[in-house]
Image 1: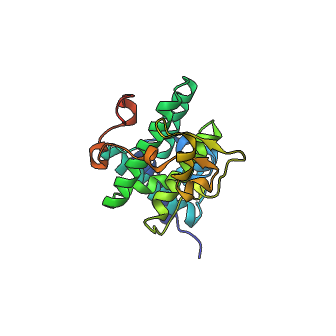
Image 2 (image 1 turned 135 degrees about the horizontal axis):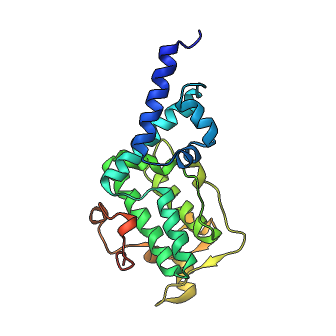
Image 3 (image 1 turned 90 degrees about the horizontal axis):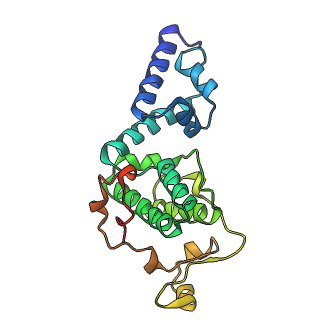
Length: 220
């Protein structure tokens, strides 16, 4: 059955509303949806009908981004941007802490059932240093998997470094770090102890800590 004009207009209207809720540029929203800006524009003005999968993804992503924004939670792309900025400034320590903070934000969202966690299912950008990108992927996938979530981010699955990357514990050294690295992380060829992945702050205290205003002493 052919789509009626009113149905086409309603779908376009809902997509425009989703874009507004996402609070992103058309380019950024298109990137998250896995399409191009020109193609998305044809959906927004009703000239072309999106697939059912893309339409549902757009609505789900918009709702997740809005929820994350209202709660002050990190999302993938803004975390990636900040991590890239830290690495560009030569501050690898802060880049690592941002990944831990992102993990804590996601953990709190998943535990509280916040719809913002769905914003971690898709991303449009990568961390320029493959070590940190693989670390982020491993940590984020682990948070979803250990809770047996119905959906796990596809972008986070399977990446593995060709050469081992170790971040030895400052007090206990390399061998201790190797012995205390979780299996799910060593499988990615990353050697970091579970103690170094811990945070002293409670996850609930992270709510409302927007990346744009985060200070480099926020995470301990």
